[in-house]
Image (tube, rainbow, N blue to C red; front, side):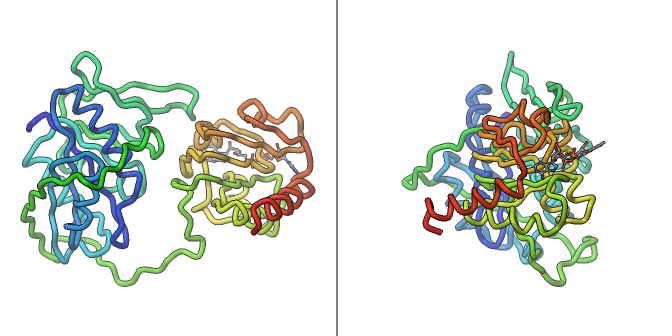
Length: 328
Ligand SMILES: Cc1cc2nc3c(=O)[nH]c(=O)nc-3n(C[C@H](O)[C@H](O)[C@H](O)COP(=O)(O)OP(=O)(O)OC[C@H]3O[C@@H](n4cnc5c(N)ncnc54)[C@H](O)[C@@H]3O)c2cc1C
């Protein structure tokens, strides 16, 4: 239907990124508000198995474009395919994850369709028949609500972990609508020559536990200690921009306004003062534990638990305790 809500299904190495299911949940809520349906759309080399997974999370129709050209993520090919689907079916709303892949496809599709785009939304609602998208502004100190009345579809990227995961029901099935879309190699600007996994292969955005370090860590070796704590807890390593700018840790780890936005169950901030640009990327974490030697550090105002002390003494004790408690 023309007022359906469409969700872009992101996948990598043959697996759907679980956060795409989160979008199917909020997509269903929006569709209920519009009296329409939530549908998924997916682009890839082969998508049958992936489409089946989407049915388990409440969609009854998946629009799919398949082809060799979609082997590996090629932003220009995916965006051209996505915008062709969106302009053909003109759903009311199209949702993408606010990840590098989702943002890439959403932004290029919006540009090709000449529509607006609300990036990094944290609130989505149908209110008085209008689709309202809320996002953070000014380093997270304010929120703005955007209505994009002239565009159809209204496109938003959604910050991961902003909405509850829908329940999985493996008895569900549905219809895959396969669309043909051909594109010549000559029309593409990118080609994948090789795929090299980053040595710091991390998925900060989806991690449930993050141990993050700032300028207070003092040296690159300090991050080895934080990495050890993250490993014991089965978590990922984060960092403030000050630590990244000092060259102690790679940019992929940066959390904040110009880094990644995260919402883990536990965020352990070590030697991080709590500048608004850092808070913008982690303040919605379920539980924030701050370790800082300055009792007046602003991070303590946002922390669920605060430890005033030298991280070089506190962190090794935590590693030791968690190792013996968790048997690792
Ligand atoms: C446009 C813009 C975008 C930005 N984007 C980001 C961003 O994405 N992410 C980000 O993080 N920042 C960002 N910043 C930078 C931000 O303003 C701060 O400068 C930065 O977050 C500070 O990092 P920090 O807390 O590690 O360092 P500091 O502010 O220097 O704090 C270090 C803390 O460590 C404590 N400490 C020192 N030694 C120890 C010890 N041994 N044990 C325990 N505690 C100790 C100190 O008490 C202090 O509180 C941005 C800035 C701008 C202008």
